[in-house]
Amino acid sequence: MWDNLLGQTNSNSSGQFSMTGKIHDITTMDPKVDIFTRCHVGAARCPRKIVVKVPHSAIDNGNAYSIGQIELANKYPGERHDCIH
Image 1 (cartoon, rainbow, N blue to C red):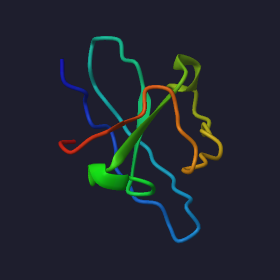
Image 2: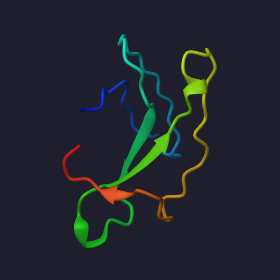
Image 3: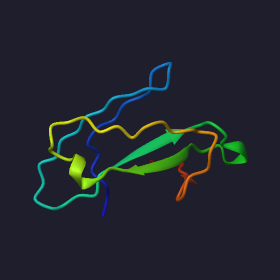
């Protein structure tokens, strides 16, 4: 099953971003933030994709959820290169 795109944004010159999204669906969802970066792509030339899972407790609670700081020089579990996103 395809993911539903709930929102999309770019970071500012400081690397910060804010994003909101809405969905009107009857199924449950597993929210996540996909981060695409061209930092340290090497010979692959496709952007690196880092996935940050958002806890269900952060959905519909009216509060902002912070994913914290992501150090792009690090490798992350499940990270891959994604040419088609």
